[in-house]
Length: 196
Image 1: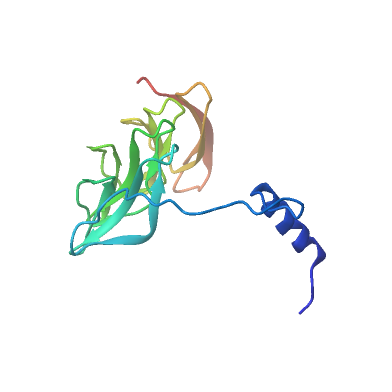
Image 2 (image 1 turned 45 degrees about the vertical axis):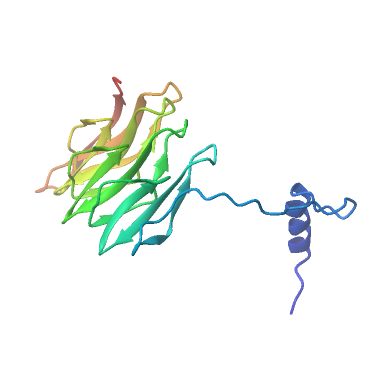
């Protein structure tokens, strides 16, 4: 086996930040466990589908029972869906969770207990810094849009990824309309704003 010199240096840096530097005594990393939630009987937690709130006090987990999926937030059970499509996302203050759920062939974003509009496909929801507004990209038929809070933007043939401004409610993205016959398009730089 060939030794890679930088690998041991990298490991030392990482371990050093955990208190394992060679010139320091070992740090006691004893584990203190706390039960955060109880999974209902005859149910299981979906693999790789657990998220912690920013403060680490609340856990959200996708749970499967009898072929249906729901979000378990602490001990509180959410609505059942055919599938929860993506890892749950917490708001910056940790008070609200958002996720993408599938019912039949359609998807919706669920924010807290509020179910959003149905679409054919949805990207991962992202909270604005205010912790109240969720932004996501959605597909309806062959068209795409950006949804800010509960407001659906204009439908385009293509929508790029979006960026959220630090002012909490401004969203920028590029979009394009294409002529089906000529395959030529017109591009736009869009700016959306949350009114919440």
